[in-house]
Length: 256
Image (cartoon, rainbow, N blue to C red; front, side, top):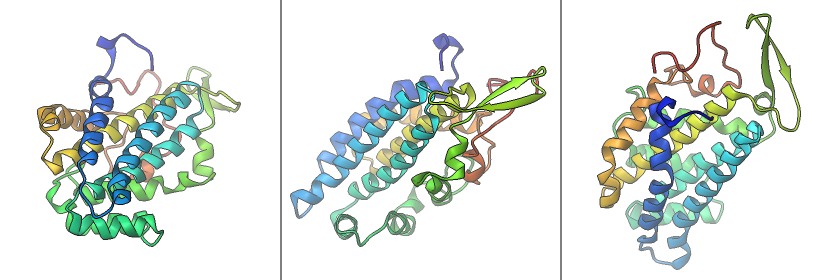
């Protein structure tokens, strides 16, 4: 996405401000974990580093038109944040789960189930007044197809090119098929991941730097929820549909 900063949507500007600073704050919080072994203490820290690496690589892939690769990395980030979130909980809750995850006995689905039962009820709402459990659970389930090379993922490889005055489209394929709408939507998903990390850190409630940007985190969520790049639906498989078309003369920037 390239434009003057004044022309960019609110969610983009807030994400630019918050993404890397929240990762830094999160790394500080995960470093403070005090578990029964050094290995367990490092899990959350390493998971957040992985999330940061996925964002860095995903941003670069997205710029170069490798949108399907960027979507794979979005899925990796969603899973990483679940592990980060577990690591920020009290040892009595976190240690058995982290140990089970490390030894291959606890899947990400089981981790989220424990979070849903014991932690998420205090989080409040997702993007559109749905529960946090519904938001996170639906997103995690819908991003699952991007764990493998599926038809859903293949759709992100194609560049839609309009012709006949925008009444018809053709799909182009290649090594670098940059599609501006796909690229902008992936940037929005990166902003969503930033907001999710912010909410996770706010729930922990012991990092003053995070508390200082609480209003900006809330503003980011509101701006994402209003974007016309989403369908304002809790069914995330719809949000992750590869192609989004707008009526001639209309765009995702309308009324934003």
